[in-house]
Image (cartoon, rainbow, N blue to C red; front, side, top):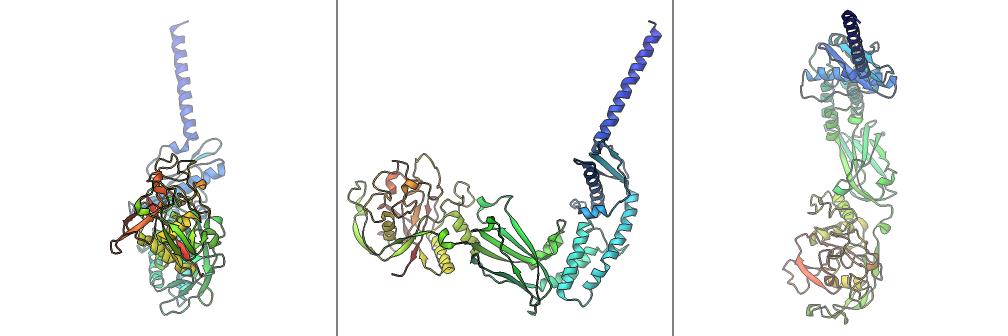
Length: 538
C-alpha cells in the first residue's frame, strides 16, 4: 500500500473523528440548552420539565423574570429576583420561539435581544397602565375608604403578579412608580382604620363565635372592606414549631355595620391547641406581594391569643379528695424516715387535685394567652421542652400566676396545694411509704428517679403506670418535685417553699411521700414543677 493512500486514509479517519466530536458537541448543546453559550445583548431563559409544553413555559417564565430582574437591578443592585404569575407569562412574548431544545423538547432555551425586550416591555407597560386607570381614578375620587382600599389592593396585586412593582411608572417617561403612588394614597387610610376582634384572649370552645369590626378614626363603621383572617398555632413552645405548622387563611368582607364573621378552623390540627387569630387588610394576598404591601397589612393588623378546648374537663382531669383527718408524715414501717418527718394528724377540707403535673404544652398555652414574656429557663432545651413533659424552671410565683389565670378562665379557684393536701392526695387513703405502696421505686421501675435506666431528664407525664396511686394520680413520686404553698418549719419571711415527691435527679429514698425539702421560692429549677388543686364546695 502506498504512503499516499495511507496518508489519505489517515486524513479521512481524522476528519471522521472531528465530525463525530463536533456532532456530539452539537447534540450535547441541544440536549442541555442551559449550557448554551450566552452572548452579550440578550436575555436568556431556561426550562426543563417532563413534557415539551411545560418545559417551554418554564423557559419563557425564566426569561421574563430574568429580564425584569435585570431592569430592577439596574436601579437597585441589591434587589431580589423578580417573580411573576403564570398569567403574566401568558400575556407576554406571545410570538417568541425556542432558541434551542433537545429532540424531545424537555430541555428548552429562550433568548431575546435586550432591544427587542425593551420595545415589547414599553408596549406592555402602556397596556397595563391603561387597564389600571379606572381603578386608580377611584383612589382620587370621593369613594369610600373600603372602595379605595379594595381598589388599591387590586392594583398592587396586578403590579406584583406582573413583576412591575418596582418598574411601572405612573406615566411613560416619569420616574414616580405606580406602586409608590398607590401605597401613599392608602397609607393614611390604613392608619386611620380600626379593627377589633369580638373575642378577648383566653379559652375558647366549640361554640365560640368570632367576628371582626372595622371602623374609621371617628368610629364610623366601614362596610364592604375586604379583610384577611389568618389562624396559626402558637410558637411559644419551640419543640412544637415545624415547617409544617398549618395556617388557615380566609378573605372576609364587612357588612353594612362594618362586621364580618370568622370561622374557627375545622382541621384536627387546631383542636385543643393554643392558637393566634390575626385580622388585617388584604393587600398581601398574592404570592408575589411586595414588602410594602405586607407592611400595610401589618399596620392594620390586630390579633387574638386563644386556647381551644373541645372539652376542658376531659383535657384537664382531676381527682376528688374527701374532707377529713389523715395521718401526715412518716408511716410506721418507713425505717428511712427522719425525725423531721414525724407523724401527725391533719384535717383538710374537700378539694380536687390534678391527675398529673402541669405540662410544657399547658404552661405554654398560658404564656401564649397572657402574652407573657417570662419564658421558663429551660424552654429552649430539647431535654426539657417536649410538650408532654412536666414544665420545669418555674418559680413558686410563676406557678401561682398560672393558677390565677386558670381560675379566671374557668370560674373555679385553682391554687398550689398545701404540703398536707399534697401528702393526703399522694397516699390515696392508704398508709404506705410510696404512692403505689411500700415497694422501692426500683422494683418494677415505678418512677423516674436518678439511675432509673430509662430517662435522664424529666419524662412525659404518666410514663410509669405501675407508679400511679389508688386515685389514679401519676408522677406523685419522681419525675419532678412539686411546689406547695407551705414552708415546712421555715420562717414565713424567708422566701423558702416546700417541694414534695422527689425528682429524676433524686435517689429512690427521696421519693418517699413524707420526705420534703425547702428551697428558694423565687428560683426555677430543672427538677421542680407543680400541679394544682381546685377548691370545691363542701
